[in-house]
Length: 244
View (cartoon, rainbow, N blue to C red):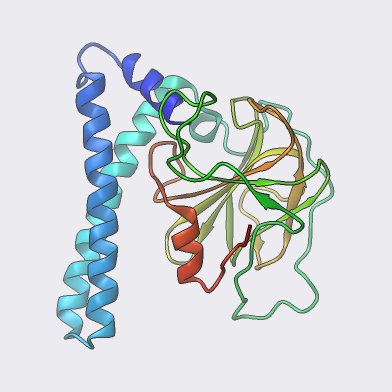
């Protein structure tokens, strides 16, 4: 996925910042956002004055907004479906019947792993011959047709297809982060749909650039490539600990 970002940066108009410089800005803002998020959490745990917490949260949001604008421009120029066709209409993506929440879902959904019967394979930041740089998510090895479910409550932001991620769903959660579920064989939600933890998003598959069926799971600060953060520590903060 990072390869796509660097290709996009290289294709940026001549008047824009050089590719290496822009990639550096992206990396800087991802680090700054995570530092700001940790600062907000520390202040809340320390029962800091509300004004201090608000200022810290405002700084975090400013960093995210800057990163969002930069990546949106890059991905728009590349023609990334997430930026130009988030509902998947142009790509004629394989949409199944719209899913409904699990019958036992409540207001305070318990977070969960994105699939079951898996084996953890390629991890975040892993190097290998399949990636020019580093892997941007966590792969869950499962057979084609395995149910893929939302890890927590949120709103479907993207249901699209047509790039290296194949058929994919991106969900925005209440804490502002986004989770991506890629290489699906079928999509069972629609853009704008609210989902609960454990709700069916689609079925695993081998669409896009893959060597076999699996789920690519990613956590991002924005919906766009380049803003990924380590997914397993993020899940751990939600009380979810996927096992090998």
